[in-house]
Image (cartoon, rainbow, N blue to C red; front, side, top):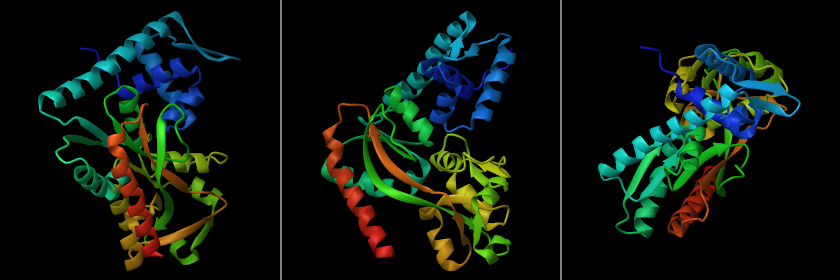
Length: 300
C-alpha cells in the first residue's frame, strides 16, 4: 500500500492554492518559508507531478495542482467531519471551544467556570491544539469559539483581545547566558533552541521577531509547553516561552531570564470566532479579561 500523505502537506497545498503565495501560506501556518518550500517539494516528489508554477503573480497551480488542491480540501473537510460527527454522537456539547496550549493551561479553567456560571446548564466540548489548528477548526466550522496566541489579528474572523502575554528567553542557571543576563538578537537567532512545533503561537512570534536574521533550526522540537519547560530545566538548551509557564521557576531560581536586545516578544492572546458572534460567550470573556488584568496587577 502506498505511504499516506501527511495532513500538514495537504494543509500547505490548499493554503498556497487559496492565497496564491507560498510565503503567505507559510505565515498562516507559522512555518518558516524555506521549510514550507521543502515540504511542498517533498509533496511534489511523492506525487510525481509539479503542482505550482512560480511567477511574477505568485504561485499558479498547474492542471495537476488544481486537481490536487480540490481533492486535498475535500480530504481535510472529511477529517474535520469525522471528528465533529464522532463527538456529536458521543454527546459532545453545543458550545464547541478550542484553545491553544498556553491559554488552555493558564486561562481556560477560569473561562470554562465563568461560562458555566453565566450560562447554567450549558453543554460544552473542549479541545486543545496549537494556534494554527484552532484557526483551521474555526475556518471549517468545527468550533464556535477559539483562543489563539500570536503577533497579529487574523483578518477573516471576529476577534477580541483577552490579554497581552510576554515571551521570555530562559536558561538553566548553569548556562553561560545566566551569568551575562543579556544577549543580542543575532546570538539568539544562531543558537539552537528548545522550540515548540511549527504552527504554535510561540513559534510564530519568535520567527516573526527574528525574521531579518537567519534562524538556526531547533536543538529540540516538542509539542507542549510542559516539554519545553522540562527541557529548559534540564539544561538542554535555551528556550523562548510564555512568562505564564515559567513564572514559578524564575521566582525559585530554577531558570534565569535573559534579556534579548532589539526584538519584541510580546503577543496577544485572542478569542476568535466566525461572525456573527455568539453573545452567550460575552459575559465569560469579560470575566476572563478582568481576571487576567487583576492577576497581572497583583503580580507586579
